[in-house]
Image 1: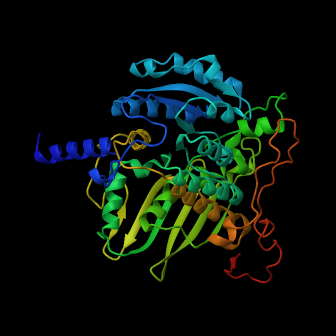
Image 2: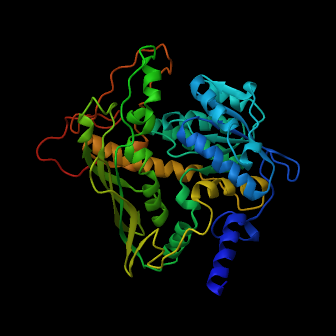
Amino acid sequence: MDDRKARGVNRREFFRRAGGVGVGMALVGAPRPGYVAGSDMLKIGLIGCGGRGSGAVRDVLTAVEIAGVPGQLVAIADVFKDRVDDVKKRLTEMKGQLRDKIKLTDEMCFSGLDCHEKLLKSDVNYVMLASPPGFRPMHFEAAVEAKKSIFAEKPIATDAAGTRRFMAAAKKSEALNLSVVAGTQSRHTLSCVETMKKIHDGKIGDILAARMFDCRGPVFKARERDPKWSDLEWQIRAWYSYIWLSGDQIVEQAIHSIDALNWALGAHPAAAFGSGGRAWKTKENEYMGNIWDNVAVDYEYEIGGRTVHMTAITRHWENCDGAVETVVTGTRGQSTLRDNLGEPLKDEGEPGTVQEHLDLINSITGKGRHYNEAMQVAESSFTAILGRESAYSGWRLTWDGLLQSNLDIVPKPLSFEAKLPPPTIPVPGKYEIPGLAPAGEKKGRGRKRAKG
């Protein structure tokens, strides 16, 4: 083994065991509330039995194995019982050494719109929130009230009201000293962490601008609606296609790259000016709901008395070139997170989806630095919402104006008996944001004028 490879292994082991970047003994502390070192079992509960939730089970149990701490999946919950039953069956039939960490009983499998409340009343001490994002503020708030250690999948809300609710719970989680890690896995991926550290150390100079692309094929196509399903059940089962549930592609998918923009600058934008629409999604026989399939946004960050522009381009189109990357340009050079400032670097550590759970475990047990990423992921999620709303409305929007607005798109009450109105597709110039100037006030050719 050459010296370079030996150094790589040591760096990998340090990152993996200590819990992320910049971790030293000074950051290692006592176990977090609800965990007694050497005696407690990590009792893991999953809320949201979709694809990401079931995938997170394997990730967290792999992290438990690496950390060498006792841990088991003991509870699962979803709005729909058929999904709970399906995930329980697949997990209990899972092959390999992780199978021994699945300890599910019928009594600890919950369903219904209040499934999260049932699970949080149990003795789980590590809860994973993986339901559609429209539910995240409610579920996170309840998990904080229950004083659980939390893994919150991204994004954390789909509107201003949900973001404010999540942020309020985030502040309470900080006051309670809870461990919270978000599903923005780039912040737990070794190559990204090391590259971002060099950017912050000034290797490319002062940041002048940045761009991100999240351009790929469609994520979700229509399937036949069961006539027995209510409006709410149908929308939740087709959650990605509805703005109130997914937030649209820029919020649900592109948040990883948008999070990297905020990470690079250590701030959130002050304003956004966006555009977009529906090209493929006009084919209603294949695509459903009211989300768009392309959005482009110019974000304005106020850094040290100067304005830095970040460009975000997202689309989900068929038969087109794809690109998923983040590029940061400085006075001395340019960097992407994947190329490590021009030096090829393989991801020698664990995958980010595993490392994020390992970091949370080390935070809970006191073996690593303390993590609470709640406010961080809230700001990244709202950055995406800000860009989306600017594109929908055709207005240049400010952060403060939109955050303080009455934008609240989650149906009320959430009931399977309620009749929901047909989803409305946003049309720029006609779309209204409650609490901001109504559409139709702007006349003439239009100017870039911040709302709020």
